[in-house]
Image 1: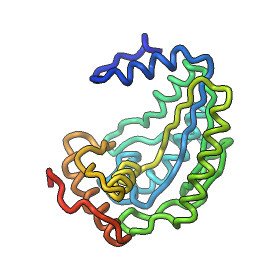
Image 2 (image 1 turned 90 degrees about the vertical axis):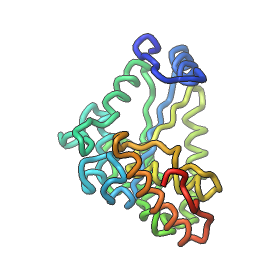
Image 3 (image 1 turned 180 degrees about the horizontal axis):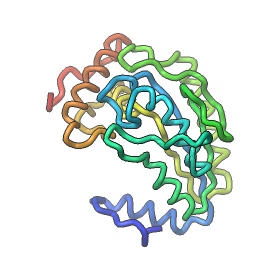
Length: 226
């Protein structure tokens, strides 16, 4: 695989090491974890779908395209508001080269995929600004079941790849990391193009702080670039 991929920016050679390991692995397992959140309904937060309605279907369509090479009903695969196709196209091609086992893990989506999957959650999350995205007991259950699924998937495998499809997921990651006391508002990636990233970060920063304050958790009071 490393002969097909040119690494552009890898100052610590981490990507190169991963590619070399995958190339030498005799068998691999790829786990695609799906999730939905009402955060993705807000415009300007996620490019994982052209509209809010489309973003609610992105996890379903990405999972189906990964497994079938198309969506189950023949609908188009997700595109961004700028017409860019879902990365699932490249992911499927890479997994074909690796001849990797593929598992779909539904952690709670608006529209479950119509392919074989492991169902571990049924609740799409509320918006991060709510301060109560998921019931705490449900979060603990997802975590424990995830450990067991990961252990089973890794049995007898030389490499395990864990991926996610969660429109609004980078905003969720910002909320979790900020709630843990890390200043990350300037360091979280996004599906939004670079030209709009500063405005995107400001929107996410406000949503995250609102949610953390409602939850009674420590928020990042001031961003160095806001």
